Image 1 (cartoon, one colour):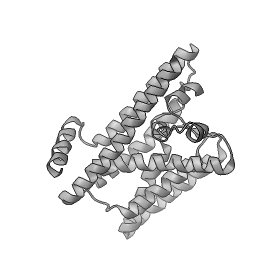
Image 2 (tube, rainbow, N blue to C red; image 1 turned 135 degrees about the vertical axis):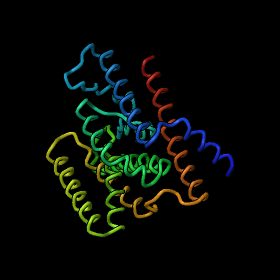
Image 3 (cartoon, rainbow, N blue to C red; image 1 turned 45 degrees about the vertical axis):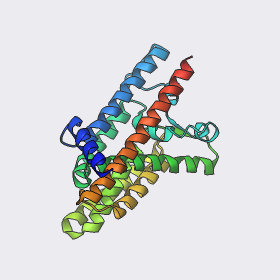
Image 4 (tube, rainbow, N blue to C red; image 1 turned 120 degrees about the horizontal axis):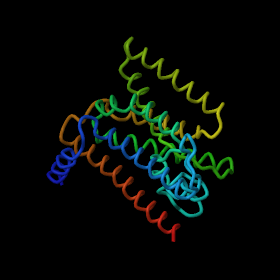
Length: 253
């Protein structure tokens, strides 16, 4: 198994763009799904708004997080697919700006394999928390976007800056906390923002940051563990998108 994992990691690394391959793959998937969403919206409505707003039914068919679908139809794959969907051009541009600011340094810090797992895991946990809040409030909520996972990256940064200490990292930590306050203040003032997913992503990112060593894997055992985590994240993404395609095709027929 050790030799197989090592060979697989070398093969995957050779196929990935360098540097920051995981960041580029996530970004590419985000824009690919947005393009699919826009094309599907035009096909369904024969209309596109100036901000390229995606039709709600299209988002639903492509895998938006929907509390009713999760509870009554057991469509758990929506917890993953929703991470890669966006509602309009402004939504994806703002998330991309934050993602490119936070993502590459963290990928270099943790290594691509760990970073990929952390991004997907915090995104899923954010949506799990969002669904739990919907259930507690007895509301049929729905949401899309990478912001839960991006808040997970912010939580990782908070954990790293708190662990390392020193004047430089204390300054970074103050800036990050200001970001958190602004994001949640904006979320509560504006409608249509999934604050619960933001909170779940932030909290899980911080906890992961306190658990994981803030460096790349140091030996063969840590590298194998990181590869297994990355493979688990990839399996979750691939299987969820396969379910989304099956669901989309079934609703077309």
